[in-house]
Image (cartoon, rainbow, N blue to C red):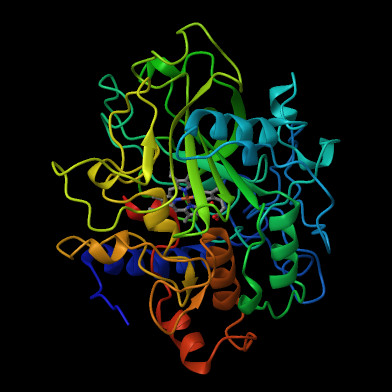
Length: 435
Ligand code: HEC
C-alpha cells in the first residue's frame, strides 16, 4: 500500500475544518440563512428514508431565480441510445471524438435561456443525473445551479492580464448508464454500497466549470454563457463554510468529459476537455463567437504515459489540439484543463478514486511516478482500497456520507477501511483542495 506523510497543507485544512464546524454551530440561528452558508437541518433530505438533498443551503429568502433540483431518479436500466463517439478512434480522430461527445452532452441541454440550460428536468432527448452527497462543507453545492467550489485560478494562470486569484465552480452530470451505477451504489439511502461502483461501457460523465473571473481579467471569456450562483467572495481563496456568500455572475470556462470506452485498453476511460473561446490564443475559434457552442477542444487522453521522459519522444496517450495554446497543461504536458493543477492530469487525479480516499495529487517532494501509472478500471490506486472506477463524485459523496453517519457500517467495506475513512477526516476532498 502506498501511504504518504501528512503535508503542511493537509494539517492546515484539518485545523480549518474543525474551526469551521465550531463557527457553523455558533451561526445556526433564526437569521442564519440570510448571508451565511449554513447547512440545512438534515431532516427532510440525506437521511435513510428521504430523498438526497439538492444543495448545502436553502434558497435565500425572496429569491425568484432558478433553484437547483438534484436529478436523482436514477434509472434501473439504461434505455437504448446512440453512442456517436464510437465512429471515431480517440487516438487518430481526437477532434471528431470530442465533438461527438460534446454534441451528445449538449443535445436537449442547451437552450436560448442560458439560466435554464443544463436542467435535466427540461431535457426531452435523454436523461442526465447528478451525484448525491456533494452538498456538504465549504465546497458543497450552492442552491441556484448546484455548483460545487473547485480549485482557485491563481494570478496569471488563465491569462497574463489576470492579477487576482478567482474562485471557480462546477456541476457534473452522468448519462443513463452512469446513472444506473449511481442508483445501485446509493439504492439504500442509509447504507450505500461502494462495491457496486463499476460504471458500464457507454457511461458519459460531463462537467461544466465556471469562473468568477471577469472579462477585464480574462479577455478571452467575452461572450461566455453566464449563470447566477450563490458564491463566496470571488477573490477569497480560502473561504470557510460560514464565510458570506452572495448571488454573483459566473462565466463558462471549461467543459470536461469522461467516457467509458473499452478501446482505451489500459484504463477503460477516455478523458477530454474544452476551453471557452479557444483560450488565450483564440486561434481555434474566432474572437467574436459566443455561447455554449463557442468552446474548443484542448485535448484528449486515454492513459497516463507511464515512464514518459520529456525530450525522449512524444506523449503517446495524450493528444493535444495544436490550435489551442493554454497557459498551462498537466504534468509534463499531459492533458489537464485551465482550472486544473499543473502537477497532475485528468486521469492521474481520477485514478485515485477509491475508499479510503487516495491522495489526489503527488505531494511536494514525493516521487510522482505512482500517480502516472495506468490503472485499469476496477483496480484501486492503493492496494487494499475499494476502487470507485475513476468517479471522484462517488468518492466525495461516500466520504461525506460516512463523515455524517459515523455509526453506519457500509456494505462492501471492511472495518479497517471504514476506520481509515474516519481517520482521514479533514483531508482535502475536492479539486478545491489541491491548490
Ligand atoms: C486534482 C484533481 C483533479 C483533476 C486534475 C481533474 N479532476 Fe475531474 N474531478 C475532480 C474531483 C474531486 C471531482 C468530483 C468533485 C467535483 O465534481 O468537484 C471531479 C469530477 C469530474 C467529473 C464528474 C464525474 C466524476 O468523475 O466525478 C468529470 C467528468 C471530470 N472530473 C473530468 C475531468 C477532466 C476531463 C479533467 C482534465 C481536464 C479532470 N477532471 C481533472 C478532481 C480532478
